[in-house]
Image (cartoon, rainbow, N blue to C red):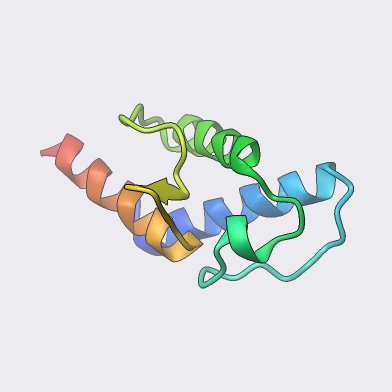
Amino acid sequence: MTQSEIEFLLIQAVAEIQEHSGRAPVVITSDMTPLEDLEDFDSLNCVEVTVEIFEKIQLNLEFNNIFLMDNKVLSIKEAATRIAEQATTIEK
């Protein structure tokens, strides 16, 4: 799976959570940091996205919050890079 495909899946998952939570719709881009840029998006929502993405790409990685790494909040692009790197390591 490519970086772009993972970014697309993350954007889609974040948008669905925002919509299902009744929050105002916004255009979500890969440069956005959901925890900082989206209304009421919290760590529980991050875990929901993480679980959904891992199911879709059929990976079980060692973290439960795709948007947080070493106490640093990640953008969608950074989170996709993190997943792609982990997936490459697992495939080898």
